[in-house]
Image (tube, rainbow, N blue to C red):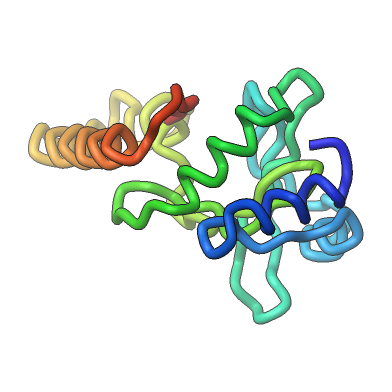
Length: 156
């Protein structure tokens, strides 16, 4: 999305399915000027932030290479319209990125692949835990497939 008018257009188009609209100054304030970087990913940088009501949020600032046109807007609206225990739903949108609920245990990707996580040799996950994770991922994907009419970028 190019500017705040694009965010407003998404909210008008999708109504109650659209997440809350934020502008850059809102995002800068909630992230304390982008001071707490959580993760660098392929689509941008994730920062820890705090919403005005005190709720902790993950703010993903999208890189320039991320699609920011109609397809991106449709994906956000589609995901925002879902409610599933295994899907992190966007809480907000701005022309720079997305605001999500902060997952205090980190992302699945970090949990599985990062050094020092539960996946290290000294601290392997039990097979029952791994199977529960796989079933949860499958259920989340099933929900997305059921509501999606376009190809979504599915990330760990």
